[in-house]
Image (cartoon, rainbow, N blue to C red; front, top):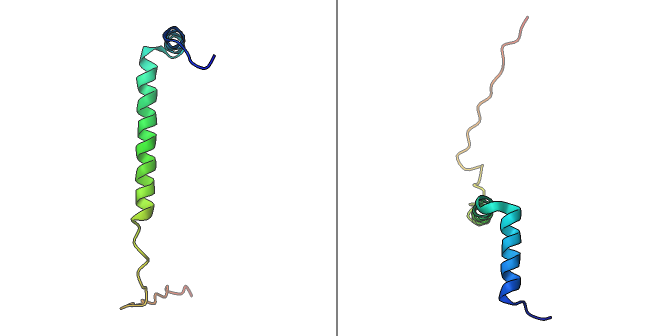
Length: 70
């Protein structure tokens, strides 16, 4: 009961192929790979964010006043 024979695995493979079809399995694996790549990219982006710059260095302010309607 602990291990499956080759025949068990062949039956499982046939059932999976019948349920998903030949074209769906590579498409599904491609989607999984894209998800993993985007997750890794997102994690790398979080690590690579630079610290916020100091806003007081050489800061110039421009006051803008709209023309008042009389």
